[in-house]
Length: 137
Picture: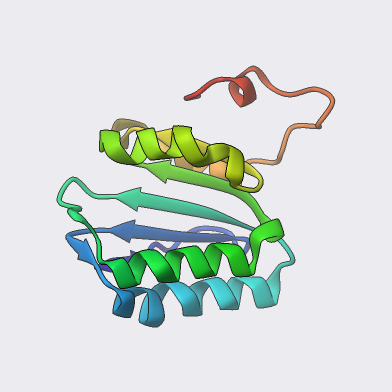
């Protein structure tokens, strides 16, 4: 199941994944939220928190995730993935170079840091902050 997290600025779409995520979750929750955000903003940021009881995505959900990401490929400004699951953080390390914008992994204990980072202004490109060069802030 996916739920939309509130209390983020209009340029941030935020979700929390629990249990098993299905294609229907993407069709009824993720896609409408992402499309609404892109109607308001040219570039958006994504905050995605995986709860400890998250068990995975159905193949249909993976396909929808891929489609949503690719449809707006150049307009993802920043992505924060919050999880303690090693397989997700390892996948990010392998595929991060394919993803647009800045992407960071945060452990669940650092969810508040992830929330601060996802809404903070980007550092100037010619003067990256020390946190921009670290795997985790």
